[in-house]
Length: 96
Image (cartoon, rainbow, N blue to C red; front, side):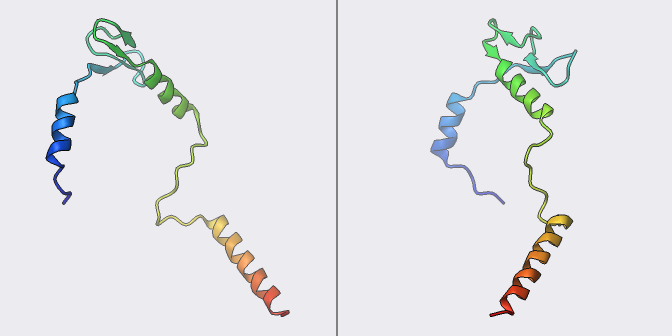
């Protein structure tokens, strides 16, 4: 069970909390917009989701994001390469 938050830190967070009227665009589920006016940049609500949406598009377009596999997954080619390098090193040590 996680430890409770520091009361002073929690009070500071609560004081600064400002709900954001966020919704997903009806034309594109990957675009954040103002929930009241369906605008990416809404001066009436004081929100600007342009950078967030750009960042989300960049992540979606990048296929080479280096996300490590779960610890239980073994990368078979890497494992074989490591084993081969180990065996070659052990053979080389036999000459000493």
